[in-house]
Image (cartoon, rainbow, N blue to C red; front, side, top):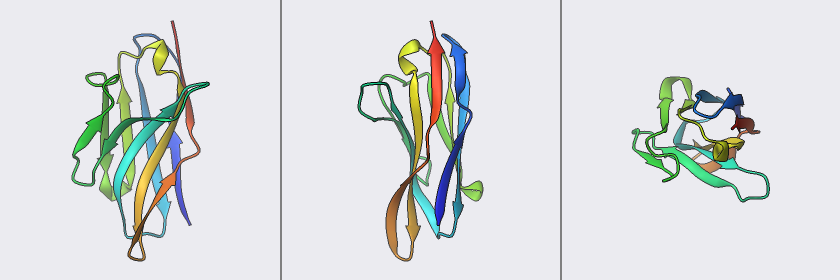
Length: 119
């Protein structure tokens, strides 16, 4: 059984910062790409940022320069540092990991953590 557990969400004023963490646990060989997605009320889930195992990163244009994704492979953990937050960053943030186990790669999702940015 593989689990991804997010933490670090909350309520913050516009211009503030939050740091999200997501730790993977269970039995697996390694995690390849990891990423953060978000879903605002009434909208589809969208990619926020992704990072490869070799730490190549990719960001949504709306968060470039404000958010930073990083990972610790030894801890099977991915982080999202969010600075200069805006009300439009509000949503449920989900962690995603491509888990390599038994010669196949399977995407896993966390349960989500709420981020609310007040104006």
